[in-house]
Image (cartoon, rainbow, N blue to C red):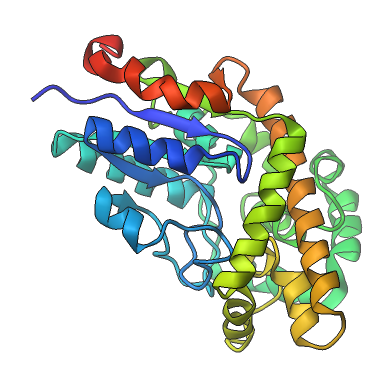
Length: 310
């Protein structure tokens, strides 16, 4: 059986990329593989717009909701798991369709990751405790004193990446910037398959973001966040930084009104979509960009898919 080349579909949140992936998977006999950093988390089905049971019964889905929020999922783990899911789909004669909005995951998949040695648990624990003790701004200052090159790349409000830079520096004696400059091994070569970026007019995209959040509220997003908070997880974990968690948590605590929380979450989502667009334009201009109208006719283009990708 001929190995079926992967399709990669990136795009900002609420652009319709998951709908496109589902249509292609049904037409081609595909397996959908998640490349969204938040849709991996078990506790946030509604708030991350994870595919529901109706969709997952139509075609196989992989890497959705399989990680507990107490864990910090990584690009390295994604690359390994996505590679295995792609191979599994190909062995079954299915088309692997990787879809999501996390640019770093696509970079890990198509360019590989730097060969950074594992960090010992004691060093990892030390820097997590240090971050909780002094806060991200002081952590950034500490990194700047020891590794100004890496500090210049990171925001003082990003404790997860600051901790990563410091723990790698302690564990290896080498700046994370130097490790990142070393080439990695790609899991997927873009030229072997098809790579798309789903794009929309900005006003249309923002309207879709707002409408989707209203739908999330109707589906139980507030109750989902309440259940998440009851787990008592560290605020530094990625799942706690998912879009909408902080505004809805403020509403639950009585610190804001439902209307203000909803507007804050919508504004947060629009800002995130804008950053995604900027990143995609900077890093994926060589991919084929398609708009909403082109999405409707794209499936027909894959009538002779295996020959197109051979």
